[in-house]
Amino acid sequence: EWTTGNIVEEQVAAIRAQVGEARAICGLSGGVDSAVAAALVQKAIGDQLTCVFVDHGLMREGEAEQVERDFVAATGAKLYVADEKKRFLSALAGVTDPEAKRKIIGREFIRAFEEAERNILEEAEADGAKVEFLVQGTLYPDVVESGGGEGAANIKSHHNVGGLPEDLDFKLVEPLRALFKDEVRAVGAELGLPAEIVQRHPFPGPGLGIRIIGEVTESRLEILRAADALAREELTASGLDAEVWQMPVVLLADVRSVGVQGDGRTYGHPVVLRPVSSEDAMTADWSRLPYDLLATISNRITNEVEEINRVTLDVTSKPPGTIEWE
Ligand code: XMP
Image (tube, rainbow, N blue to C red):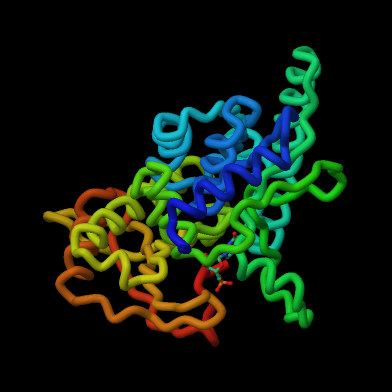
């Protein structure tokens, strides 16, 4: 019988057989796939696994804590945190072109991950152990997609946090290779991962870096993080999380518009709400969220985030619009 419990048992046995006494590392992105893959491997081989979290500072509110505190509490996994916020901010200084941002974030991510890796390798060597395996959260649809690649046009350079740097000679552990997303979520829940991780909407590897239209700065990140947290809180409170594929909040950081608050004139920034419905992110439609919910989100953002005085709604399908603005 094909149950979630069976999948866990089977994978744990398979991972033990594959890895033996060696050590493994696993990059955590904050997303479902890497978290569930890591939790499975941790269950199988315990402290032979070291998880790596590169904090690029482009995460949303609470997400770094979800990895550093909640994931660790739920799994007991050994976690190596690389606080690289400054590295990413300085690499992104002055950059406004979307592809340039993506390339910089991807490049810095690999460098940061490799540095973390070297430290972990050295530590293992000092213990007389060897890190032979890299854990990846590859799902069945990823396997199919890369196998049957018809060379689809590369519209944006995608970057997967936790992705495999090319010149490494690790053997791969891919415990989710046979699973679809909903099965991965069920396995995550079975393993006791928090709902915030298991039910999380997709979030791009380059993070908020591609949701600030204009240069990425610390203060702009703070503004966007605050607005995004309010929007997510209200979406969740409305019970509509599952109806929506994802809802990016985009800060038009170089645009200003006049507003009025109390008896004062403001000259603030707009944010765009981009709620979309989709099956696989290849195509999408804008979600018809209830007006009352949109009103609540708008009121809260403009009341609680001083720098934002206007909230707009993106009503473009994909195509022609992509889900993310950059
Ligand atoms: P677009 O904007 O191309 O996005 O319609 C499609 C889906 O992919 C996500 N996305 C990314 N995910 N690394 C990722 O892991 C990336 O660089 C990246 N860019 C976009 C986006 O959030 C949506 O779910």
